[in-house]
Length: 465
Image 1 (cartoon, rainbow, N blue to C red):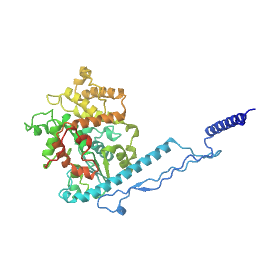
Image 2 (cartoon, helix red, strand yellow):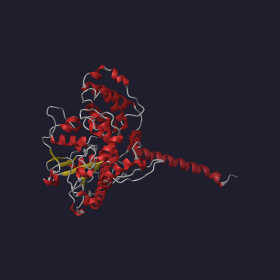
Image 3 (cartoon, one colour):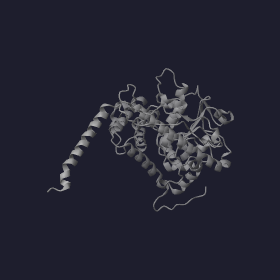
Image 4 (cartoon, rainbow, N blue to C red):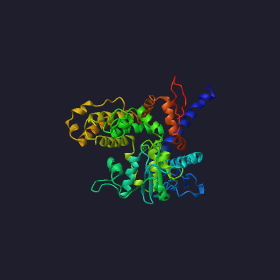
C-alpha cells in the first residue's frame, strides 16, 4: 500500500501547476493592461523652507527660500479609463531632483549653523577688517564674492552671461562660450565690482549673496599647480620668491617654496589666490544666502541657479565628468598657450606641464604618456591658436580612449595631492595649518587630516609662529 504522503503527491503537483499558470496569466494581464487597478506609488511632498542660519539672524526672520511643491500626484491607473495616468521617466527624474535639492538645502542649513557657532567664538578677532576680496554685483539681484580656485571662472562667466557683459558680435549661447581671458580680464560694463566699499555702500543688503569655499589644503595644492607649475606667475612672483631681478623668469618654483612664501608673508598683503576665505568675504559680518563648497560644487551651483530662476543654465548633458574635463582642458590650454612662445614661455615645456597637470587633476589617466609625436606636427609651431588646437586634439584622444572609472580618476587626483604634501616638512605644515585655522573652523573642515599629517617615523610637534 502506498503511503499517504506518496498518494498525495499528484494533488500537490497539480496545485503547484495551477498556481504557476495563474501567476503567468496575471503577469501577462498586467503587462497587456498597464492601466490595471494597481496603485503604483504615491509621492507627497510638502512645502519645505530652507532654514539657513545666517549669522546673527533669528530663524523666524529668514528671507524666502522655498522649495517648490512637487507637481507629482498619486499615480493611479484604472482599467478602461482613457485618462489613466502612467509614471514617466520625466516624473521620476523630477522626484529625484527634488530630493537632491532638498538634501542640498539641509546641507546649507548645517553649514550656517556651524558658521554661526564659530563666528561667535572668533568675533573679536574678526572685527578689524572688512572684505579683502572682490564683490561682483548685478544690482539688487546677485552679489558674488570671488574666491579663487573655487570655481570662480564658472561663476564670473555666469554673472557675465546673465548681465550680457561679454563681447558683442560673438556666438555666446551659454556662459562657457565666453573666453576665459575675457571672463577675468575683460571690462565690466553691466556688472559692478566692489571691494571693501561693498559693505559701506550697502550693496550686500539687497540681492542674493553668494560665496564658495574649499578645503584649504586642496585649495593651496590647486593654486600651486595652476599658478606656479604652469606659467601664470612665473614672472609675477617667481623673482619675488627667489629675490632676483623682476625681469627673471622662474620656472621651477617648488611646492615647498610656495608654501614657505605664504607662511612667511601672511601678515603682509597677500594674493587673493591664497588669502583665507574669511578675509576675502568676511561671512561673520556679511549675511550670505548661500555658502557653496567645491566638494559639492555641481549640486550647490544647480541649487543656486534654481533659486535664482535660471534653470536654463543647468545643462545636465554637459554636466558629466568627461564633458567637464574637456571644458577645463580646452580652457586651460587656450589660456596657457596664449603666453608668447619664447625662452620663458616655451610652448613645448608648457605642453608637457599641461599634460602633467591634467593627470594630477584627474582628467587624464596617469599611465598615458605624453605624446611626443605632437611636436612632429608642424601646426604646433604656427601660432598660439594652432598650438592649442594640436594639443587639445591629443588630449581629447587620450581622454576618449581611457577606460578608467571616474572613481579611479578621483582617487588618482587625491593621491597626487597627498604625494605633494608628503614632501613638506612638518614644521611648515603646522605653520600653514595655523594660518588657515579660522577657515577650517568656520567652514567645517578637518585641520589635521591623517593622510597629510600622520607620517611614519616623523615626530609630530607644534611650533610657535
